[in-house]
Length: 185
Figure 1 (cartoon, rainbow, N blue to C red):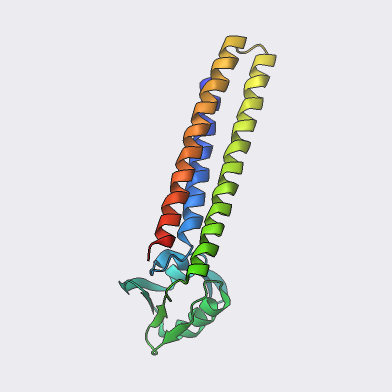
Figure 2 (cartoon, rainbow, N blue to C red; figure 1 turned 90 degrees about the vertical axis):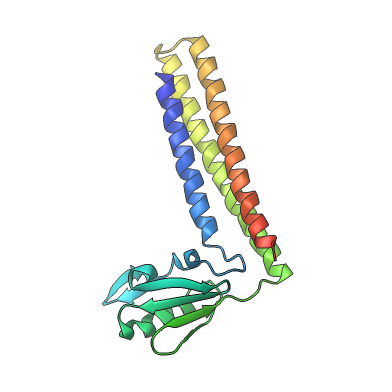
């Protein structure tokens, strides 16, 4: 009975970590990563479309991204979408492809990015704790409705705390890895 509650909470915590990981991937860490373009949408015949759906994105060099649109007339809209985004890279094009030269990160910018990472990790931890709180309430309700015993309630709360601690540890590791990536020159 309560195992289902704990399993559900664990699954929701896993999804939270995946979302935080995806958000962290969009942060620029000094080397060219096509994922920094994931949130950019382009006006494609009046429909907002993900950038990776209108062209091929590659990284031929560590600090260079190349976007090859499938339709040559999409170069203008892609360039405008990149300029309007908050990635801080100016595109250049030769009529066939768009090049994005990822600048070296300054020490100050690296520290700023680390602060952003910490903030995202903290938001993830808050979400995990909220999931734990919801699960605890469900367990208490099961006890109140006499569906589980008091011993089961104590055991369930202990198991839930273990699952929560594991996920907090996991999200901390994700954050530490991203900070290490940002700070490495």
